[in-house]
Amino acid sequence: MTKKIDQILFAVVIFLAAFLLHSAMNNSAHTTTGQQGRIVEVSHQKNM
Image (cartoon, rainbow, N blue to C red; front, side, top):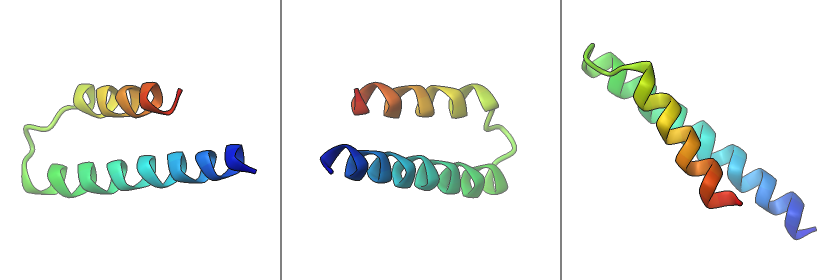
């Protein structure tokens, strides 16, 4: 059961990260997809 909760939390974290990145991209065109990949990578490492 805890594993399922972890998966849900992970999905929420990714969703929030994507949402924040989308807002940041709207505010500044200097944001690169490289940063996006890095954030997802860090979140994935935290989950493991």
